[in-house]
Amino acid sequence: MKLAVTGCNGSVGTRVVLAALEAGHTVIGLDAVPCSEPLASLLLRKKDEEPARFTFKRVDLTDFDAALAALQGGVEAIVQLAAVRTPADYKVFAHNTNVVISWNILRAAAELKIDRVAQASSVNVIPLVWTERKDFEYFPIDEEHPCRPDEPYGLSKVICETQADAIVRRYPSMRVASLRLSWSLPSREDALRDDPERRKNDLWGYVQEDSAAEAFLLAVAGEDGKWSGHERFFIVAPDTSANEDTVELWQTYWRHVPLKEGKNLEGRKGFFDCSKAERLLGWVHKNP
Image (cartoon, rainbow, N blue to C red):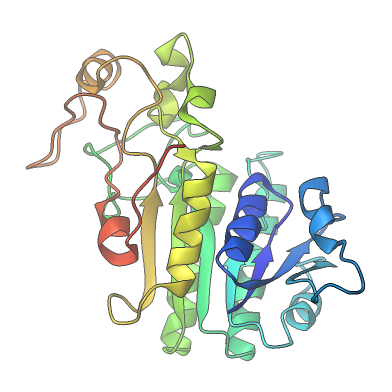
């Protein structure tokens, strides 16, 4: 299919582009800055070679008309990764940028009858590393857990998810996946820290970047019938990035948080339950 990847220069965006091309898709990369070096080589083709399956457009996606124009030309699905990835100024920049870009992409998709969208959400819809008050209700955390962020980045992602709820109500043919990514890294080793306390506020979570990219492709190219409308999915590795047993981490740092009925934290199981992504998307985390 013809796939648009916004925020294509980012660490996850680059991996999505490469994975999509490997799978045989045609890709339009959209970003606000010039094409990154890892992707620039894809634009170089000799005249006697077949046309490149990757094209790049530099575009300000906070401008709705610009976003609409960039997505014209037969795009069949969108992977929406363009965003500010931290709370930034803790005032308005991350919040306003993320909310506007998400709405522009969703609304442009509706306008152009692009029915498949996978947008990057975040584990930070749950109060985690940037939040003052951690109010976990149970472990492992799943999509039923309340979202109560108190900072602009997590709030922006909650709003992006709410916007997806609205767009599919208005345009029921659309299918939108909000993928709640953990810390995306090349390998588990990159997330290891000598002191587990340094990672306690994000529950020692991570996701291998190529496995995260696969989740986005599954979300836009998955088989029909398993789900419709808008669904939220945690996309996190099934283990932690700590060398200690998970029960030890739980008892040391979060002993007041109960376990959800029927669940356990044996061995090095992670604090997130991603069974919904496996059930509906067919996604299973892989480490290289």
